[in-house]
Image (cartoon, rainbow, N blue to C red; front, side, top):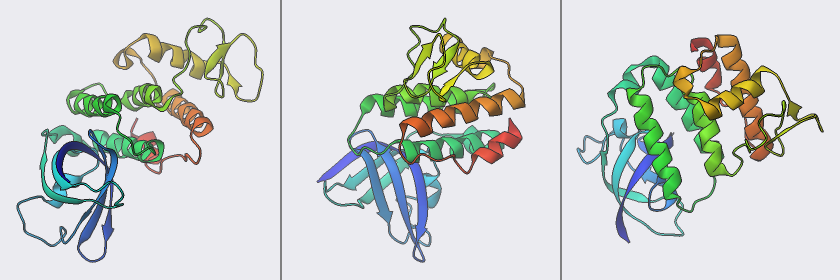
Length: 235
């Protein structure tokens, strides 16, 4: 079935001498992977390797077959021009971190237009944002809404947060109950814009570890992204 869809590139790997395998999240079909034959050596103007950088937003034409692991693109072009994301080293580093998060977190193949719209809006927001040091913190918190474990803030006057239950408690009931700066920051991110929150590097890094632990509790097999160490050095 020849079809079209917008897609967000999640990852890419070289295959053979000239091919590329690209994993995307599409608006119409959810997770789709594509085999781009000969693209690393081809001079074709239909699509170029530069189109498939992580978190690029694309308009794709392709021949979709439901039970095929790798689809084949007939035409591709960028939907949006994202100059800042690939020229600003800080934003590029954040892109790779977010792409690693998404590659691990989004497993279901079925489409979710709400999730697609969220991801597209977040990418465009990062492109134009000047004060983006806390962007990845807010991104992980907001993404948890679509993954099914966004914290329940109805009792956020309580001092402890239970990572397993995703709720606030008056007293700790397990080793996964925490209080202190990370829990206070969790509440602040829920109530305020991430651009208004002031953090030093130590507190920012402590909180990202807290969020990664939250993801590890709720997503089987989730691991700390390799690109995190680059972010630690930058922000």
